[in-house]
Image 1 (spheres, rainbow, N blue to C red):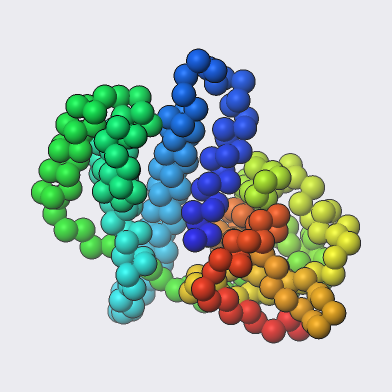
Image 2: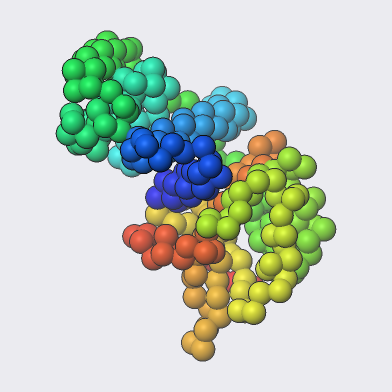
Length: 262
């Protein structure tokens, strides 16, 4: 859920930055689809690099848990994205996953219905003949959990120098509907320092995914407001996605677990 919103926000921000290159004589939907499609590919490739690094750090005798249906579906979509060329990938995804009509798909990808049919046939055939791929086990790193708690603790103490020690020099920041770029180039910490609403961070889980939860204080106590997603590489935070401006993401979750703030 959060990953999907993350990609959506990046795609919208990218489209906004490229508005001056859009040709008003062409339909808008295919242009937006191509931007979103490219952002999805970037996300999947970035996640595969991270998961391979985690798998390499796992102990040889560790036993990987059985993936629930949600992650299994994600792996299937990832396989589609990484295996098929762009046109076949787009056609299979739009038809077999989102159930768009052939006519709509042809408009989205700037092709013909015949071209869509041919791409669908090629893509489905390739997927059907691929050998089964076993996903590498995902390691649960105690070190990552420790760093996540340390990040939250220092953030709550407004120890910004201490927070920066946990962050890679080239770390990226996405603040949904507000900013996308290098964290070092943003006024990110200052915005929290000057916030008028009482807030705290806590480590928690949203639909089973470990995340940082932003809490706001109300008359009856602390309540979850939104989520923050941090990515780690080699024990440093390399990317932060802050959804404080889109709290409805958390409201759409089916399960939210929050550690009690100290």
